[in-house]
Image (cartoon, rainbow, N blue to C red; front, top):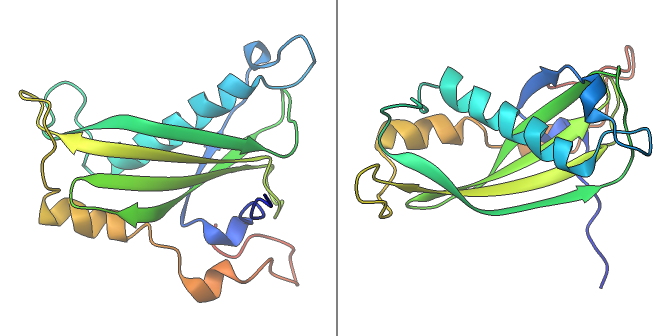
Length: 163
């Protein structure tokens, strides 16, 4: 079975720079695969907080991760910075499928690509609930624009177009 290629940087809508740490390196001299999950989760949660959708102690509804996956393409090591891109994959009634990519600054091809699915549930009952309309509008702002996703880099500067 042939896997689809990893998504290039123009696919992503929102960006977060992650500072790598010495402790991220493993015995092989690069960031351990589990650390990528930390970076992806940090970028996703930061966006949710910035969008006013995540209130850690008292927010309702809350998103529970029900599925995650990651594909790795290149290694990275401390002290290199990493940029995490975030986009909406799918929006369901009570679920959100996030697409994330990890990149070296200014690079088009990803180090890794991840997907997370959150099901939103009531804090008290832990049962799925429909996403509020205001939340749906916020999530839809993460939708990749088809014409931007097809672009690679700004030929004059070599920089990412959507960053």
